[in-house]
Length: 300
Length: 300
Image 1 (tube, rainbow over the protein chains, first blue to last red):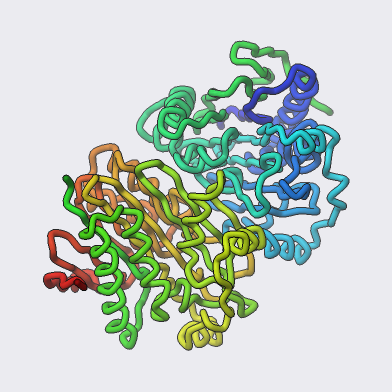
Image 2: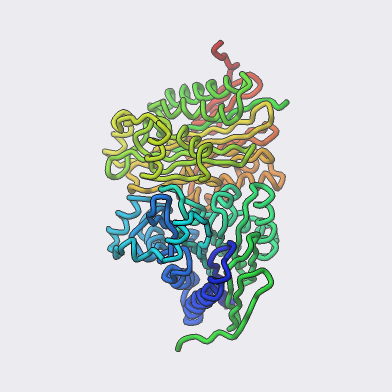
């Protein structure tokens, strides 16, 4: 029996002071939702879904409800999920009008022979699967609208990684992308090995930060390679992010769990919203040294 | 001064007897086009483009003219290019109505801050850049139509890797995808680290085969990672393809050039159309042991 562990992030960027309190609460809510699944005997995959759905539904994060807007003022969301027990993955790029892209990514994984569906084809697949359509306006938060009007750029992708009591590893990532992006732009989030990776024999990763830089170094897969070479989750996180900065000049952040439950978390941005839950204790923080912790109280 | 080298492939699959002669000619034409660029002092990037354009224009290959059809009978093409001297990459997914997706991928790399554009956004970008629109019918070969009618599946993605005399590495890959794919499906081809990779400090890779399997192991990046650990281009090709087969049950093929000009080529499919040109000699073949060679005669 493994000790169940879950880690989540809510984006690595210069999180403004007035968003920090809500961000920390959102991280804790997501961790509790995922940890509850693990404690009830659920799988790593189910825990990752539960945590990400919480953050997609929270307008404080750039994913699902809260997604930032494209240059044209539209919503185009990317998401992926990967099951380390089967190495199956599902992902969607540039989808709109659905509340939870992580659920659609899961349907791609479970119901098709493909990994990645994008654009109109992905929207058509959502319809085929009976995913309820929501008005785009309902996904747009005041904060996202403000960023779009000012064309300021925040990166607050969300992600989760979990290891369950059976030793299964899963990871997921979801985002609205970057403010004022070109329509049709797909970032690192839905790309296996870039936005996330999961392999029962190694561990799981979810990344955030400068998407194009993350793609150029295949950040998530780089971290699992380094772990295959014997590095710990923390050592691999630091080495891969430093390499990305030196190689392509891009900053980002990652959460990592090794197959034996070791947690890694690191970022080269100003701040990163992240946390983890393990052995009945929950940990969360935003600045590098600012990690708070308390016992987890779960719903009965 | 480095010795310029170029390698190309035209897909790893059970190439039928009646296509072998044309396939071999197509490989030689592409190699000559790319090698001519390198011999005239052109860059690795220009050589890769020239070789891929030749194969996109050749209806015997599943890329550009010759692309296979989606389930709905449409053409949706994927392509990527990567410049190992800058680590910049450009790629497009699910584009239609253009003759040479590799040119559009290059424009994404050169004219935007993004790496990957898909679907309608990518088609709109093509229009913005003044890329000529072609009728979809003009891209459909009799062979592709036949595959679609029978719903048989061939995988004949094309790709090229080159190292120029300055030691710059580039790689590119282009495809019409797989016959009867779901609209919106993006395979490994346009994904950095899956369909291709290039890094001046290591070498370049282009892959082909079962796209979803290639994505799950990040095949191209796996190969460069193994080369970073000291394996030769050939050793890394074999090890990564065997790993893919063992890990996710998928077959494929790769061409690889190390930064010092060493060529690697391997496949776990029935056949693979591939070849390379180096030191004034051209090599090509389709079955594992069937490699022919002769001196290159270039146009004056």
